[in-house]
Amino acid sequence: MQTGSVTTPFGRRSMTLALVKGQLNTSEIRPGKSVEKWKVFRDVCEAKTSFGILDRGLAVLNALLSFYPDTKLSEEHGLVVFPSNAQLSIRAHGIAGTTLRRQLAALVDAGLIQRRDSPNGKRYAHRSRGGEIEQAFGFDLAPLLARSEEFAHLAQQVAEEKKLFKRAREALTLCRRDVRKLISAAMEEGADGDWAMIERHYVDLVATIVRTPSRADVEKTLEEMEMLREEIINRLEMQLNTRNMDGNADQSDYHIQNSKPESIHELEPSSEKEQEAKAEHKPQTQRTVEPLKAFPLSMVIKACPDIVDYGPGGAIANWRDLMSAAVVVRSMLGVSPSAYQEACEVLGPENAATAMACVLERGGQINSAGGYLRDLTRKAARGEFSLGPMLMALMRANAVPGKQSA
Image 1 (cartoon, rainbow, N blue to C red):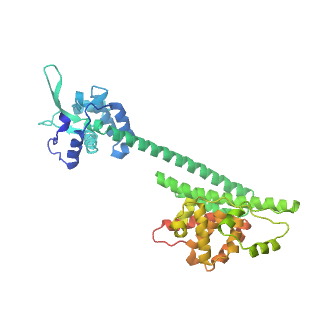
Image 2 (cartoon, helix red, strand yellow):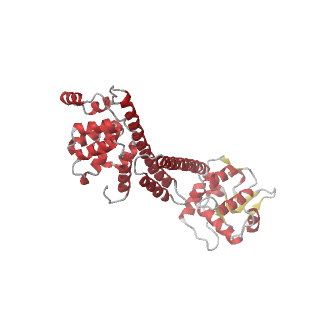
Image 3 (cartoon, helix red, strand yellow):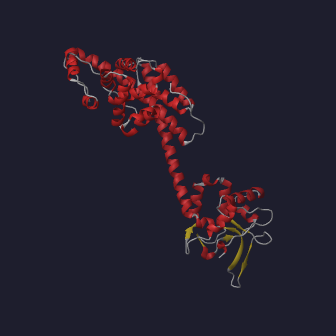
């Protein structure tokens, strides 16, 4: 069988070990194996970037396959085609001779075809008296048959990558629209806050989008844009909750209980004296800020990797692990239980744990962790603070090698 031997190219063309390996691999084709030639061609077209093949190269491969008489590639009928350059040029839509030779060389280098050169470098076939081809010299299509499963797998991977890339771009488009319209609504309706600064941050973020981004570029921008959207929503939610509570306080004098107090006490219960003291000093009309939505745990860990060391077993797999680590860090940094519990009541347990992770990450720049946390809690209660900017700043700082968190 022709595919089982190693041949060297004619003339000045050099032989390489890669060509030897490719020819040896074709000798391992399973007996009786066949594959639809145009299906293999479609798979190669889909995965062309994996081989570094241009559209002109695909046109040449298409022309070579058109000279193969059967619809299925198989060793039974031979796999060598031997058209002249003139014939190939016509079927490749009039491609120039120099371009044709360059693309044929690229197909060989990519391992898609092999050369079966004659002693004089010409392409022809020896036929039997009955007209059957006994030996042919030209281009061997055996690699397409031998690697058909590989090409199909690569095509699926490329198709999946295209799908994920498209969805990431769609998500970024929707997120950009949300952020832009939310900022506009807040500015037009006079919501409290430095919306001009937030708008500048949005513009700067949009400016980082390159002309032809990769999926990694899009997902990185999407992650930061989603954090900005969460920050905006948190700010607006705090202001709306404050307005609602102000209205309810004038009409009712019953207590509004925290939505999830058990989650705070479960991690760090207050003593009986602390609870009695709180009961004595509670006003008859108590306003409790509804806990804000938490940022994704993966973003928190990315922004504050130091907190992981304090998780159970030196790892953080869920929010409970993060809240447990925050209690350890609270004690280590000298934050009082009352300050942390107040933060849990105002921010929510998840965001309070996130705040402790941020304080730990910025530990060298904060003189009093307890005072800093109380200040953040008071600002959050007034709708003047969100964790978004702090997390984004830490993420950007940790993304730069050798740069300390700021």
